[in-house]
Image: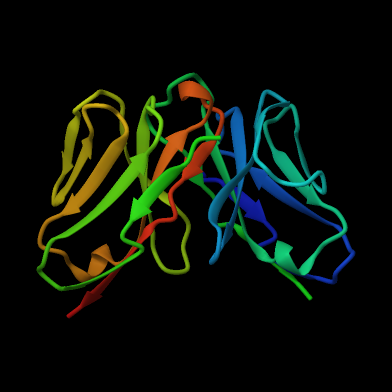
Length: 115
Length: 113
């Protein structure tokens, strides 16, 4: 079956602009979570959505937001981009039931560069 | 929020030598997952440990969960060049529900042929 699809793969934006990233989870998976990966901070949890509801949120400013649609596809938005937002943004999907015993499946990520 | 500390940050080994990475938490974990990320790639799920003292093996990889469920380790026997990458431990947020993961900083495994 198809894996987790993230678009676009690469993106270059200017400071102050906004950006929207997209994630299509594995068919049947209802949970989508987002992570930011940088060399300095590693993998950091942004937020997690299940059945169109945000269930958990990491410690990021309000400029970072997301949503999930009825087909489980998710988008995340970053407004007023800063240089420090340059990172690999990863999406992960799971069935979303309590205590998954199969882990999360990650997409290939979107590499965002802010100039 | 919870934190997981992982050591070492980097590990250089000769091909054929063993490798171990350790993950520690100040709080009791409901479970722990391990992921591998190849250079230029994305994290790939390896295993999940749930029970106190649990040990699981996958070929040359051995995973352990501490008795107090505050630490875990991944041991690779006789490393091969295909083992190169970064190994992350990760704990589920919110007491075990599917609410996202808190990752350790990872251990970069570098193998010299």
